[in-house]
Length: 141
Length: 183
Image 1 (cartoon, rainbow over the protein chains, first blue to last red):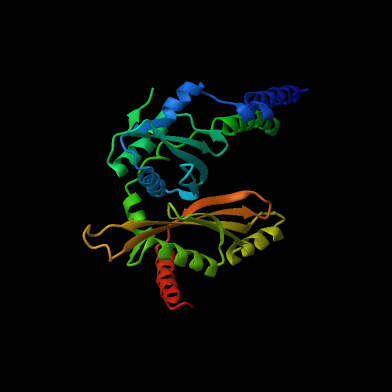
Image 2: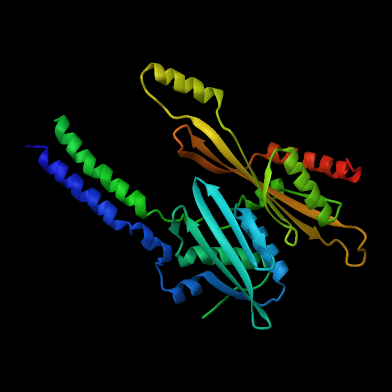
């Protein structure tokens, strides 16, 4: 008789545990933030048109931050990297032209099995990047 | 008494699971340059009096010498990514597991590891006027993931041991020399 409450509470809590995680296939197209907001968090514009130099600086910055480079493609302008430090942090950075005078740099990261949507984290990345390339990172609307 | 303790423990444990499952967030310093980052960069970087293409080719050859498989390359950006899967058992862990097995406790031990490395080169301009002298810097980084006998990840880390990097660069100079001699 005394056992009953603990069994019920266990069940309720384990049910809650399952309910709090979104069910599997929903994850395929899931986003936490709105698309527009996410883009503005993850994107900065730089006043340069040297794509190769920007990509090389992105790679050097990622290495400084403890990442190892998984893939890099100069034509597409993408760099993917992984950082292992008890956690597994994956990041992809893309560089593309914006008009005649600027480059757009966008980063998106995944921390273990969750997307990184915290603005401050991306801000720190862009701070490191602009220090490395000696250019200011402009927010993009 | 014991019964009451148990019933208090279980929901608590499940609550812990609930938080660890979904609410893990990224550490604040994950994408911040640490004070040690400059020192680590120095350990992982070396300059050679050669052009980028030759240095990349020599690095690839050395990585093959070391048993790595090349996963990705980009000569335009000077990047090579490679990996190898190797045994991760250590005698001390096995001894420990055997000792515990005598007491009837089964403990998983480290079984295998995936060692990954990326090599990144970038040309250094010394003097604008003299193009004949070519210098290139190379930065290598190693990391590894270890799995236990139960197939779970027990450790994932960046390898920052200075002797490993020193040895790598010693071997790289040798590789450059061998390539120059067409060996």
